[in-house]
Length: 196
Image (tube, rainbow, N blue to C red; front, side, top):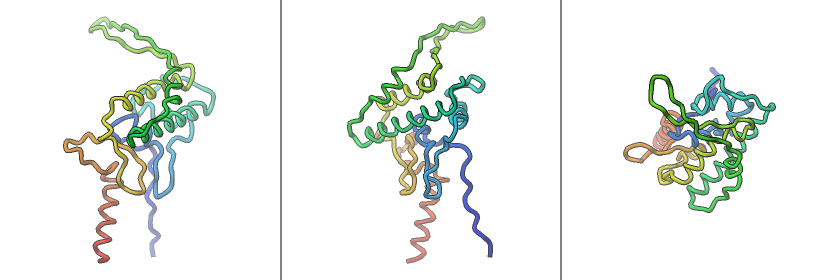
């Protein structure tokens, strides 16, 4: 008799939400019915920031150990509460997100390469983890204001907590991913039919 092989836990957070702010929420997932936090140390947050192109590799400031993780998890939960409130047409308390936004210190900088057109780039102070994460806080605030919450959804699988922005043409996306939850649903439905 062979022992069933348990599904492998993914090494990296899912990037399937079609919105980087929602992908941040999805760094906390449910895997095999258990909560799973992809952010357990500062380096996990740094890898995620590079992967989603919030920052360039090699441009990561150093903070006190654990400070970036704590700030990132705090921001994630603040945004999760506000997105859920907005999705459910409930009033949200923006105080914690505004605290992140208030700490952002930035200014426009004119960049004019020798060969090319001038452009404006936003320069940001990154002395604290909150300042470092401020672009995500700003993106979250923009999503809460301008996002189409008819298209921002949670996966329909009952065991899944992942969010996504339905950017499909027909706007009928139901699952965080067909490979993750859509197929699990199909298999479960098939088994139900076989038992009848």
